[in-house]
Image (tube, rainbow, N blue to C red; front, top):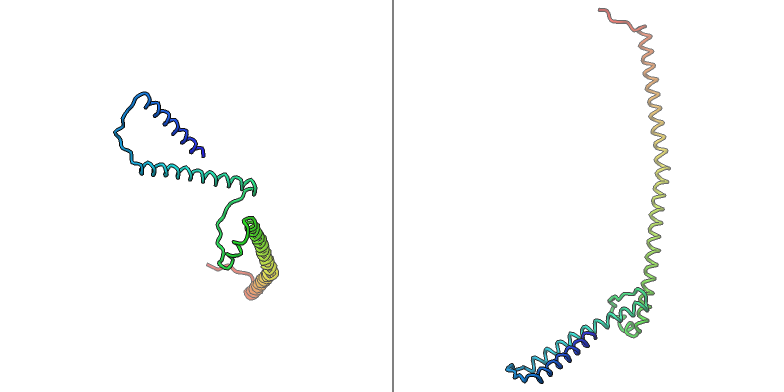
Length: 177
């Protein structure tokens, strides 16, 4: 809008200057103007101005919406063909409320689902830990016990063998040279 008012002010200044110049000096122009080209250029300037006005209006609308709805954003969503008639029958505010309600419910469901998955994962870890302690530690104790019993048996066998050897030969004699 400001650009449009600036352009009109500039055109008025130009018109004033040209009228003053014509009054001072009567100059004959040899240039021939093509009216169609001039109209096209003016239409292009008007179109550019209107596009700027539209973008300014959209910005103002977004600002107004952000004031009304807080930090809101626009999204394009795709709706199945069987729901199009229903959605088109709703007002914009009703659409917004329905979509936000569905999104809120989905978010709550997602949070609950994630919490359930975390709980089941924790439960699996606890069960694995319990089974590990119930099964692994007794097996370790049995293994250590067997290893100690075998070591004691080997020690007793070595002791018996040494005592037999000592009884048969008496004291250990040195080899004669």
